[in-house]
Every structure is written in structure tokens, then in C-alpha cells.
Image 1 (cartoon, helix red, strand yellow):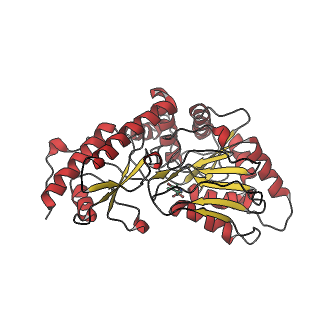
Image 2 (cartoon, protein in one colour):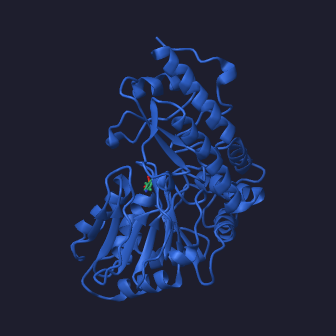
Image 3 (cartoon, protein in one colour):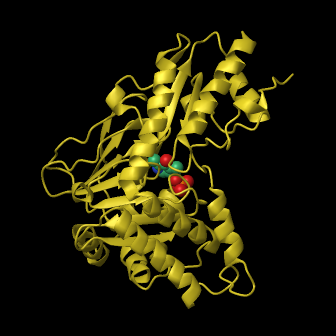
Length: 374
Ligand SMILES: *Cc1c(COP(=O)(O)O)cnc(C)c1O
């Protein structure tokens, strides 16, 4: 039996997934335009001007959005952030990495460098889910790696460079475009298109400092016996990116939606605007939870509560998965917690494409469902 939520209470758009996340109608319109047989982009060669122009728009748009410091470059390739972990393992870590792990995604990158036969076992700084592990200065590592936003738990960490000259790699898959960042504080800020950029998955994008570019060249030329497959070579990806292309065929539709979202963010006021918009959604969500004795923000420290992916534990007397199910049946999607976290929880994607008013409508819908389940 499904509860009926009154139509007047429902959000205008019911997509609150943590990735893939809401795609704006404007992006879908851009796709339709790109498929127009009079001026086709979709279904045409990725080595010709129309698709290269899309890649150029993405690269110049990201340069502006992130106020790229002098000498930094935008690289991209196929395979998503998961592939980028392997790229970084093969092309950026000289000997040993340090990983901040406070959830699934940070843990996956740590597992990648731990498996590499040519690297020493990584240093791992760990915090239990719901907290944040902070990078710790170490003379024994040449790469520091941390998530900007741990999508599996809803905890965020400021981007800060530890003392020393090890490279800093920031997994900004769900934070980029929604959380504040000063790129001087990191050497590699990498992400995918399917979270704050509201497009589809499948690509990785990386903002690279001159030190990161130099490191990749050094590591790949070192002849230390490691095999760097062409697909995992950051220098190869960068060579292609400089020509506004990818090593192999990209999903053109993803590029269309990504370019449109980057420009939409810029038109509305850029990163500051996006950060504030997500903060407004988050203030509402966490404030709502604080006002209910059956809802508690999962992340204990308010400063570590993500303003882009919010996690709210429900009292054990309320079955969160039933709430999620009733919401979905009413067109309110994907507020389930990260699978492996296994908590009685709601997780809400509050990416810039999501209207803060819709987050308010979502919490009203949760109230409605919870009152009727009781
Ligand atoms: C979604 C996500 C990933 C994985 O991205 P894919 O593109 O699916 O590989 C990695 N890290 C974080 C922080 C994420 O949110």
C-alpha cells in the first residue's frame, strides 16, 4: 500500500540522487539541439570541430569557474573518477601515498595504491563514517589524497595543502562546482560530470597544477619498471586535452550536458553563487532535522556536514527504507543512504541544479510520510 502525498506538497522536480543527479531541462534541450540534423553534433566525429568545440567550452568554462591559477591546466579522459584513481596510481605516485579515508570513496583510492606492485604500502589516516580524517604532514609520502566531499557519508573537508612538497590530490567528484575551493591548495582537483555538473557519468576531469604535470612526466619517464598503460597515462591524456579531445571516443551527449551546466553556473554568478545556493539547501535540511526529535544529522560536527550531500539518520522506530519507497512512489527519487553504510538514513543530493525550494518541499513530504507511517 502506497501513501499518496498531496500534489501541492511535491517538489517541482523530485530528483535528489547523490549521482547520477538531477539533469536540468535546459541540458536536455541542449542535447536536442545538438541532435538537430541541420547542425548536428551528436552522431558526428569526435575529431572534428563541433565536438572539439564542446571540449574547448568545457575547458575554458572550468578555467573560469574555478579561477584556475596561472599554469594550471584542465585535463579529461574516459572512465570516470574510478578510472582516475588508477591514472593517479600509475602516473602520479612516485613511491608512497597518504590517504585520508572517511568513507567508501576515499577507501577505494587507498585500495588502488595499496594494490599497485610498484608502490610502497600507503599511509592511511582514517576516521569512522560520519567524521573527517585530515591529511597529516609526513616526510615518507610524495602524494596526499583526500576526498573533498565523501558522498557515501555526507562529510566534507576543506581543501588545504599540508606543509611540504608532496602533491595534493583532491577527489572532488561530488564537491566540485558546489563547494568552495582555492586551487592553490591542491595540485589535482578531479571530478566527474554526474554530480554538481548534472550530466551523465563516464568522464574524469582533472585540474592540474604545474607540479602535477611535471610529476606525471617524471614518473612516466622514470623507467622504474612500472608499466603505465596508455589509457592510464596522464601525460597522454593531457596531450589530447590540449588539443580539445580525449584519447578515445567520449560520450558526446555527456559533453553537451556538461558544457551547458558549466555555462549555466557561470551565467548565474559562478562558483560563489553555486556554493551559496547549496548552502541554502543544506541550512534548510539540517535545520529541519534539528527541529524533529526523530531526525538527526549523521555527521556530528556541523562544520563537517556536507552542504551538497546531506545525510539524516531517522529514529529506529521509523523505517527509512519504507520512507524512501513511499517517496519514490510519489515521484521523489533516490534519497536512500549509501548501500554499504547500512544506516537507517536519508541521503539528499543538494547539488546546484536542485532548487532549494524543492529541498524544503522534500522535507515536508518526509514529514507527511512519517506522520502517516506512525
Ligand atoms: C561518485 C564518486 C566517485 C565515483 O565516480 P565514478 O565516476 O562513478 O567513478 C568517486 N569519488 C567520489 C567522492 C564520488 O562521489
